[in-house]
Image (tube, rainbow, N blue to C red; front, side, top):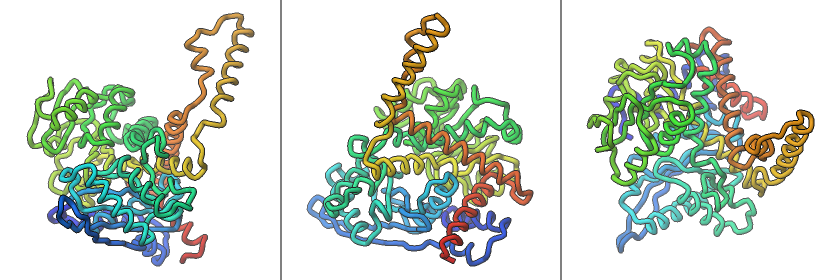
Length: 473
């Protein structure tokens, strides 16, 4: 994306946030430099014959840190992609994985392309050609570098990548683990598509479990009735908004999209809006909501929680002073610039940072990778055993109480957890423990003033420990 005027680039902004954390740590300068350094960046340019003409495409894959292997990070297909953005996102992945204790290093990839310009078969041809370049250069493999979906990519592209790798390395029995975010019937895992949005929900839930934190943000207890503005109704924004409104009773009072925004004080029905967007390819003319053409201005509307789930640099030096949200949850990568972050911290706005809030995707990608490496779906060994134990428990309750347990209660007691249950449970546990660790870091050092700095301090400590323990430094 283009650089915001009078502000550092996305990559520089991430480094400034890291520097702010390093400044409150007793870290040797050499270790700090090693942690910030991007280990390797691959740029490839390759030709593909499209509609009788040769087109040359440019792509990147950056490895920020391989202190843990494999390195992990999505591949985005976007016309605005560039190397600075890829390096910044790879850096974020390193810290993100450390924050949620996922044993991966950080990587990221991108292809400069507008997917809307190409047919399905053309996209498959381009994706497979890009995969060939990555594999040949050693930047893709189940034990070294594992991509995942990102902006402009999804399960379809991941299936193409996995199949291409399989044909290049038919001897690798773990070939399906070379990428995550695949379709379930091609080695994917239930719950991966919703994972990042679900992780945002779990992060907000955990925040609201701590009364002191809620009070600091100037909010009242509980998510019920909280007014939320969501920017971006893509995969992350859609699932976060859907779960928060349908399961937690929050009101999505505004949705911001690229063609404008919708406002509705009583709350927008997210599923109906999603269907409207699929049918009409726009948020315009959605029944019962007020349309605002200048969607970005709606970021400044009064609300309890602002969830930017679109792209980088949406809240900047220019509009940060007018942001009214009491709590900002960064569902996208880098939606706040460094300057905006400084302004909002001075205002007392509480920010749940992207390196934590956005970590649901990589967490469930880890579960998928483990599933692929172990060659067995979660729950296969113990589900029926758990059901039998539950049924026996129900019978024991009936014998002791001399009362019949209702069919609904009996089904609930005897039901064994399936793969989706286990994935959601693991993600919930991961997000809870990570927030508690961030919170403890914040409270344990008077020099740390915000959750973002605390999150980076927590992750840098783990990475530095890894560097020192294995003798990298």
